[in-house]
Amino acid sequence: METGKNYTHTNVSIYQAIAEEAYAEMVQFDNENKRPKEDESDGWIITCDSNNTSLKKAMIVIIFTGMWLDALLHIQIMERCGEGTFKRLGRRKYEDKLKFLGVTDIALLTNVKKFRATRNELVHEKAFLDNAQIKIAQKEARLANEIMSQLQPFFCRNKATKSIQKDARSSRS
Image (cartoon, rainbow, N blue to C red; front, side, top):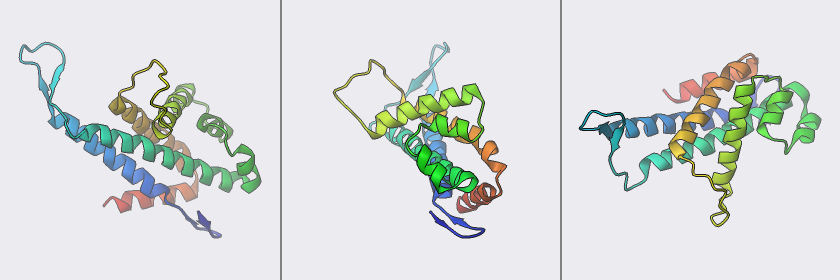
């Protein structure tokens, strides 16, 4: 991150755009590859995804949402409190940093905690250490997308972040 008096150069808008585009592609793929059951009962028939397209898109959403959140938290803490505070908070969990920045929504913080665990499991895979959980990547990607959407209004209060989000929107056009 390069900073000037009124300018912060960061990739946060790129991370956001990648996560949002991958999410939209995942949803589109999933919608195009399912059909109602022939007997009209609840549920869907999902076609085979032999290339794991949906899974790959979900993984991109999760990873880039984590990168976006890391970058956004870094920017917010640096702008509001300075480098010393950022270093002191350095390896704290997402939800701890969000609480420090004033986020108090318990449901959101709980979702961020779940997201953090999923992101860490994906990034730091330990194939032989079974945690007795099966996670569905698309469901976890939806959670990541919801977190991004829920956090944006909180950080929009900050002038610098508004310009970052404006850049993200224009980069998708």
